[in-house]
Every structure is written in structure tokens, then in C-alpha cells.
Amino acid sequence: MDNSVGTVTAQRATFDMPLTFRSGAVLPRYELAYETYGTLNQDRSNAILVCHALSGNHHVAGHYAGDPKSVGWWDNMIGPGKPVDTDRFFVIGVNNLGGCHGSTGPSSIDPKTGKPYGAAFPVVTVEDWVESQARLADQLGIRQFAAVMGGSLGGMQAMQWSLSFPERVRHGLVIAAAPHLTAENIAFNDVARNAILTDPDFHGGDFYGHGVVPKRGLRLARMLGHITYLSDNAMADKFGRSLRSGKLGYGYDIEFEIESYLRYQGDKFASYFDANTYLLMTKALDYFDPARVYDGNLDKAFSAARSDFLVVSFTTDWRFAPERSREIVNALLHNHRNVSYAEIASTHGHDSFLMQHEHYHAVMRAYLDRVAGEFSS
Image (cartoon, rainbow, N blue to C red; front, side, top):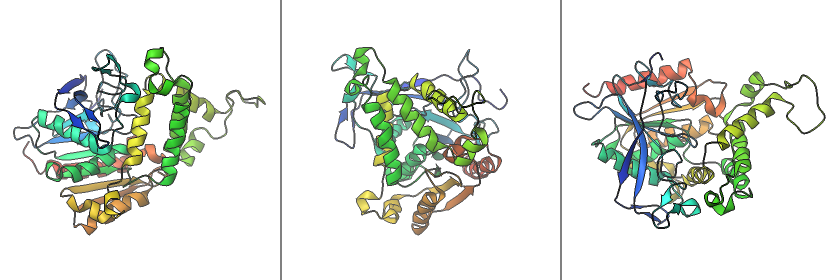
């Protein structure tokens, strides 16, 4: 693979120090799955933490041995000579707590019961994730990140890093994100959660012991979410009103190509993603609101930040619209932070942050060139 980090191997870090969640719940012991790419330099100043979005994980770049199709979810962004250049940066991808790709989550065994945590796994917040990521950084001997970056929910984590650990991050790269969800976004998440919660196979979150998976609920949740990730134009260009068979069937089976696509995406997602993890991730999205404790004043919320920022939005992203990114920019400017802002013309909607877009990648490359110029190789 050209400009790929090549074959990668997931690693696992174990933490025996209890983690107290924002909810007050305590996890006595936990593990985080992570991957690294590139080489940590001598003074450990070239590390970049990549935070994932709702359905992401630690497998950010490269592929696994024997499976060249297992390409990381941000492989077009990260690798030798790419915007996040692994010839210069040491990049870390981590699967968040509550995940279902190796980190401790609802499907993990609770040592107290010998059974999966299931519904007993604590509700997790962005602040909790950042705290656990900081402990991983400690274990890796990284006192300060050159940058923390992510898109969507990952961008929210990048913001929170600048507030929870202002001295430990030099640059925050906040892509296709928002300072909090709108009521409409919370509504979408609630409908998706209800699809799972009302699935007869959910069993109150403890479906593991019943030998079933709430596939119908997961499928519907993913179908709904996928609609919100795409723009109307992207759907029109890719599918339009095309019929699978070329004629109307006058029934309720799949007829339109867009129906076929959504059901395929829903079925695929339900085959590998954990329903409890989906609930946790969407709740973390809903809860994120750094301005809440400041009576909604985002300027005050960002007063703790010390890093520089790159904020990126996309014109057709109606779920995390550009005006939401401009709220972040304005609050940072009011706190005299150095902020670069790019609003990228794209047809792909919210999913734009995952695409290989020339202008977008040029912006990322230019900013990260500046970041790389601050440390010794």
C-alpha cells in the first residue's frame, strides 16, 4: 500500500488504579486497546493523539497481518508523507472506555460477577475518556502532546483535552464538531437509542447471557444515523431515485437503491458493534457541554485553554454545521487563543471529515507542518 504505515498490531494497556466517572461510579480496573504509528522522538515531543468518533476505534491507520482490506478508518490522513506524517509524528489511536474493540466495556467480564458488565457498565462522558487517555499517555511516558485531534465526537475530546489538561496539549485540532449538541441532534440520538432499548432481544442490556444480539434495534439505529451523516446532494448524486429492479414493485420490500444501501449498512454494523456501546457513545455526545457549568457561557468555558487550535467545518454538514464551529472559534478568540479556521466546500455532509478531499487535506498538512516545526525530529 502506497504511503501506508503497513502492517500494524493492536496493543493493550492495563490500569489498576480505580477510575471515578463523572457519574460517581467507580471502575476499579480497566484496559485500553490502542495502536501506535511512527517513532517517538528523543524528547517525546512529537506525539499526536487521535480520538475517534461514535463508531470508531483504535485502528486508525495501516492494516492487520494477513488482511489487506482491514484498513484503518483514517488511513487517508495518517501515514508516511500524509497530512499526519508518521515520518515525523508518533501517532496514537485509542479505543475509548465503554468501547467494543478491546477496551473495557459492557461486553467485558465484570470481575465481581464473572459475567459481562452489560447494563451495569457506568455511563461514560467525554471528560472520563480524556482522563483515561491521560493515564495512557502517562504509561507511555508522554507528558505533553504535540496535538490532540479528532472529528465529530473525536473533536469534542480534543476540545476537552485543552480544558482538562491545558498544559499537556500544544495544539487542538477540532474537526466537524460542536461545543454541544442541538436539541435536534439529541432527538436523533434518542430515537436511535429507543430502537435498541425496545428491541425484544435487548433484555435490558444483558442480552449476552441470553445468547442473542439486538440486531433489529442496532440496524435501525445505524440506518437513522447514516442518513444524518450524509448530505441530501450526496444521496441524490449516489442514488437518486434509482430502482434496484428498474420498476416499481408496489410492496414493502427493498425497491430504491438508497433503501438497499441503508439496510446493507445497518446489517453490517449490527454484525460487529455492541448495542450497549452504542448507547454509551450517544449519551456521551448528548452530555458534552463544557459551557454548562458556566451558565452557557462558552467564553468562560474556554478560559482554561492554553493550546493553539485548528478548527475545520464542512459546508454540507447539517448535523455539525459550520456555524457551530464558528461558535468555538469565537470563544477561543475571545480568550486570545491562536486559532486557524477552515470552512471546506464539500458535498459529503458530516462524513466529509473522513474523506480524501484535496482542499481539506491541504489545510491539515499546512497546519501540521507548522506543528512539526516546533519540535526536534
